[in-house]
Amino acid sequence: MNGFLFLIDFDIMTFLQGESFLSALKSFALAIIVWIVGSMVIGRAVKLIAAAMQKSKMDESLRPFLVSMLSVLLKILLLLAVASTLGMEVTSFVAILSAAAFAVGMALQGGLSNFAGGVMILLFKPFKVGDIISAQGFTGGVKEIQIFNTILLTPDNKTIIIPNGPLSNGAIENLTMQDTRRVDMTFGIGYGDDINKARQVIQEVLAACPHVIDPEKTDVFVSELGDSSVNFAVRPWTKPAHWWDVYFYMHENIKKEFDKNNVGIPYPTMDVNVLK
Image (tube, rainbow, N blue to C red; front, side, top):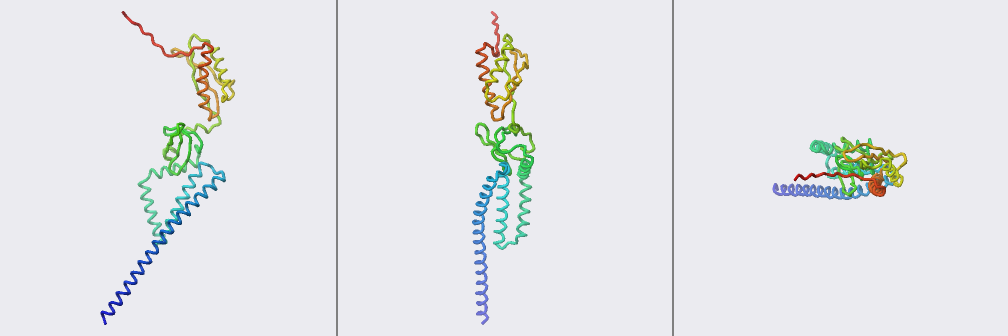
């Protein structure tokens, strides 16, 4: 009789343990489904929100940052939903997640600094997407401002990724923030050449350059009496997008017109005396 009761108790415990295992297995399977479906929904939602932001003509510098932040927040909520599906206490899970985030934050202080730098850049706007900047030893167009990094595209088509922390704390030269830029150039003539004639030739080249603003008001003056040349400072104004166009045009055509008008461009020479 006692043996029979023992067998009944054993069968009941085995059944209950089996039920617990099946329940845990169902919860685990449901959690996987929630994660997969939730990830798909989040991905689709983020794309739709990004498209809506683009249609609303929101600042291009702000869009990638907000989309990244939204994606991270939605994934955290999804993680909480998965934890709840597994039967975990959400409050306990949040406490564990907070402690883990604090530990990771202490280990990745540079990342937090870059995040704060990204926020500062978006708030104070020292530059925006499309601007050409010079910072941290690199010069290029701002392609994207992300949470932790800013991406530049150099004139020779190289991608430069600069952390936002050092970028926000260092000097930034924005080359396109103003409507116009001055092109500072120096052209030398020989001491035997006519200064007035050289000035006239330079002014004619300025007038012919299609990208120079108000060529008749451009500064053209003798800036230095060098060791072997009389140097003219030439300072035309142009749009930022045409800075290099003016620079290259002036150098090429000044040389051509000086040659036509017999104005010499001196170059270093050396006299060698041979003693016999």
